[in-house]
Length: 568
Image 1 (spheres, rainbow, N blue to C red):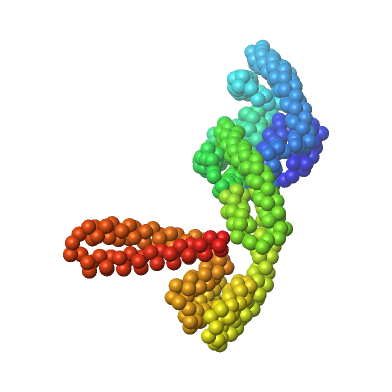
Image 2: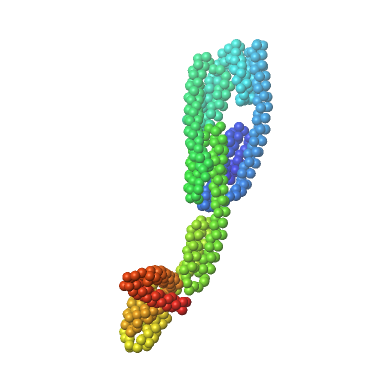
């Protein structure tokens, strides 16, 4: 039932005449409202969960219906206090009135001698007693016992006429039989609370009825006790079963409470774990609502503890997502900065792409290391970052696609040049032939890059053909060697890694010159030794010849070094 419907019931109850039943109904309505509040609170938690990883941290606004409910309950509580006060005063007044009747009845039995007058007064006292009604007080039991004792004394001590006595006995018998039928009908009632209330009234009514004839008294009393016993046993069975059921509910609620307390003490590490636990919490709340009441003394306390554990869990969850939101905000700023850098790289143009490519790859690695942002930002930011990366690499692919086309054309040109070089036939005029070979080299150098996979092959092929053409010229060995060396330097200087290759070649040349100089020094030392020694003529000539060749080779190496310096 909705909260506004329950409040309507409470408002209608306030309009009714005040009685004990009013406050019993009010207690039932209060319990209904507590259940409705639990339901609303559960729905709030479910709505909070619907936010996924980002629940609202603020507490929900107060429900104005709760204020109206508290106002009505306050009115009923005030009326109940006044009602109980009046009831207490009324009970005291009734007790005093009934005590007065007992005193008058006792006096009537002991003093009145006129039977007719005595019987008239006796009936009048009975009427007054009945009109006063039953009194829910432990003091009333003693009064009632005294009243019945005097009633019986009146019948059996006063010398009433047989007709009057039999008439009264008959009337009392009819009343008692009617009341026994009412008590018997109670046994078929489904409402135990209704049975309890009516049984209390019937028992008090039974005690108010006058005596019957001696032969009927025992039979009536036994039947009355039998029916009362059955009714009381049914009531006891109901309450015992209720206690057992409520105790079972209490144990079930304790188990759920224990689970929620453990979960409220945990600190989970990921949004997914928190969401899984929140779903579990919602299922536990649903189970709780289906269980029903625990014993009255325990029900409020365990609900308070359960609610406290729920609040602790949800507060911990809000704290986690609050901190996560701060981290996400910081990560968002970092990713925006990476997007800005990627945009700058993707908007520039390049002749050499290596450095820019490395920078963009580093940005991609940094993006992975930054961490998550809010889910609705993550997709948007990643899309923007990826667009810039795609733009960069798309431009790079287009650049190299165009370059590859040009390099294929360059390869074809170099292959055609090699064919022309192969077809070249020296004229025999060394000067003209050298000029022609230099022109081939100049044309080769003017052709730009070829595809990387063909670079070494085409270079080796050209060098092989060129060296063969130099070898075919009629030049002395030294000049031919220098020409081939110069041609090789020219080839190296136009490679992709020309600086490195030239440094390497020069280093090899310097190392060769250093070793050769050491050999020359050794020959010169040996020459001095052999010159001062007798019988060393043949060895001396051999050393002189070796020294001469070494000097010639050194001259050639020096000329090569000069070519390096000229090229620089």
